[in-house]
Length: 316
Image 1 (tube, rainbow, N blue to C red):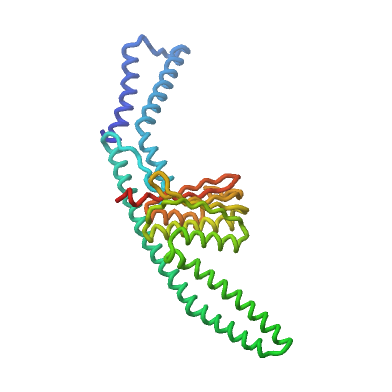
Image 2: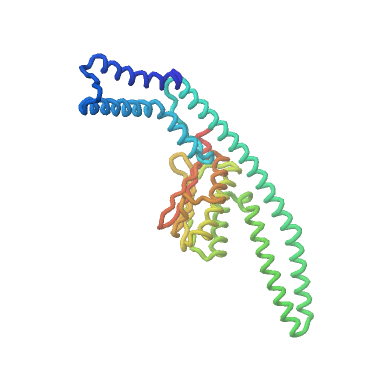
């Protein structure tokens, strides 16, 4: 039954019931209207309005659920659908919306994959240029300053040595940026070694205490999945240092229940899930890239970012 005929039938039912009561009930209307008759008529009108409102609410409930889903749906949290019940225009509308939502989720995942792949390629290019061009140039400057300082007399030697230390610190910073842009340890030694190197460097650079809990027996993961796990851990640590005001961060990686779970937990003040920024949304896009689930639990005692990756051996 279409929505028009459903609403028409509901109103016809209410009006028909009222007409039947007027025909068969011993109720008359005097002129002028007696108080008792007025009370009966007003009461009947109220009953009709309440019944009509209740029936319309029941009939239009699927539209209200569809409206709520349309205003709250987030393509970075896929899988939300409305149940498809019965037939008619409402059910067909819900089925069409669910199909459109599924198509949009697939298109968003595909476009995010292209963007992230291009982003990683650009990171590698920039890292290579920093290493080959800037790094080598600064190394040459450092060697030249050393030769000059060895031959110079005081006080010029002290100034050259100070410039040498500044150049060395800048070179170390360039190398750190290269490692962030292109995690060579991940490509050479694997995920666990890369996370160990990342957390060690993070602790040294920020002064935060980092606790590692890496489980044994991790399943083999493809390169893309390992890169997503590494980038999520990297972004979660950055958020803990910038926003959480934490003193301790725990990074765990375990294989449990047919899934690989990466969790980054800090003891900061909490960031608030409602205030998700570009970093967290970027993590959600990376999770979509490998079919993983990203959960964020934030409270006054700290924040936990949890990435759950399906075991590739279970999917094959």
